[in-house]
Image 1 (cartoon, rainbow, N blue to C red):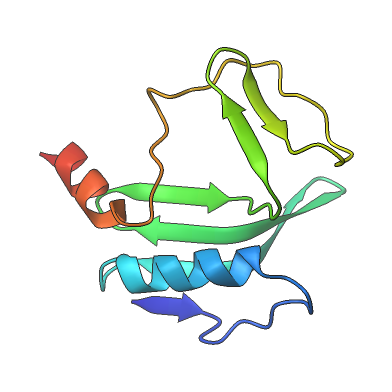
Image 2 (cartoon, rainbow, N blue to C red):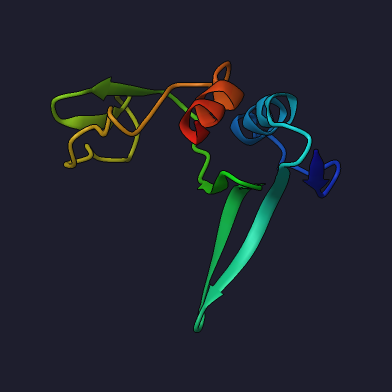
Length: 114
């Protein structure tokens, strides 16, 4: 697999992004590309994609990695653990579209290609 950069520099104290990076690097096939901290512009607005996966024949995934603890209430959405500044998500949990991985990354994508 091609990694851009080969060894990304994560900020001190950051544990979520390196953990997801390592899991993806170990799980994705050789023809995939995994990129860290991709800068994107939309007019004057600048954005950053934490992790970007380019997977020939499958597609791409732009991933925003968040650390910390969350709880999932499938009826009403995702809620951060008590004591955090974020608020409850009002959208319903998209369980039909989401799968908890890391162990099934390759198998989930290959089953959809069939």
